[in-house]
Length: 333
Image 1: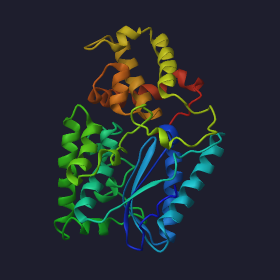
Image 2: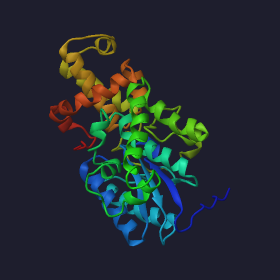
Image 3: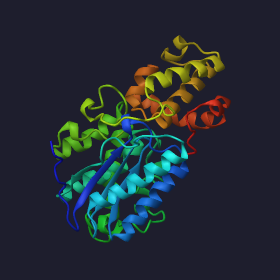
C-alpha cells in the first residue's frame, strides 16, 4: 500500500513524534541531546520553521512544529537521518535508530493546540524524569522552561504560542494554569502515564491508539507488530529490555546481597534493598526507557513508587562501580 501524503503548507502546525526502533533509547547522554537540538535548531532557523513545544524523552521525542518555507517531510528527513548517522558512528553501531518514518498529526484547532502543548510538556513529569512541576520548570530537555522564563532558543516561537492562550497580560498565567491543572492530576495519579494519555483521549476525542507516545516502550502489549520492519540493528543495544533488566538486576542484587524475594516484597525494607530498588528503577526508566507501569510490574511497585525511586537512584547509579563494566552507555543527565 502506498504511503499517504502528509497534509502540509506554510503555517501548518504539526505534532511530530519519532521513537527508537523497538522502543530502544535514542539519547544516552547530554551530548546526544545537545547534538539533536543543535541539528533541528539549525534546520528550523534556516527554513523559517518554528517549534511551539517539544520534549526529548529517553526513547522518543515530541515536537509541535509550525511549518515554514520547507516541507515538513524534507526537514524531518534531514534532521533524523543526520542524527542517526552521527549516533551510529559515536556508539559504533549499525542499522536503523528510529522506528519507521516519523509520525505527524495536523493540528487544526486552537483547543487541540492548547491541550497538545500541555501533553508534550508534561511528558517528562509523567515518565518520572522530574519529580514535580518546579523541577519541570528548569528541565533542560523540553520547551516548557523557555516559556516560563529560561533562555529561549531562537527556533522556539514562545510569543506565537502564548498568543493562543490570551493577551499579553493573561497569556502566560493562562498557559501555566492550564498546564499545572493537568500536572497536579498526573502527580496525584497511581498511573501517571495513563493519566497523561487520557489528557488527549478525553479532551480531544482522539482514538487511544493515536495517543501512546508518553513513555511507550518495548512491552509486548505496547508495540504494533506490523511496524517492526527494520532489521540489522547490532547487539550493542538491548534487544530484549526485560532480559537486559534481569541480567543487570542479578548483578546489582549480588553486589548488594539482596534476594529477588526481598526486592519484590512490599513495604519498608532494609537500606540495601531500598538502594537496589532505586538503582533498578532508575535503570528501567532512564536507561531502558520503560513505562513506569512496566517497571512497576517487574519490581512489584506502583507507578508512583517507581517514579520516586528512580529519582533517588540517580546518584547511586552514577557512583555504582558496576556501570563501568556495563556495555550500555551511561547517560550523564
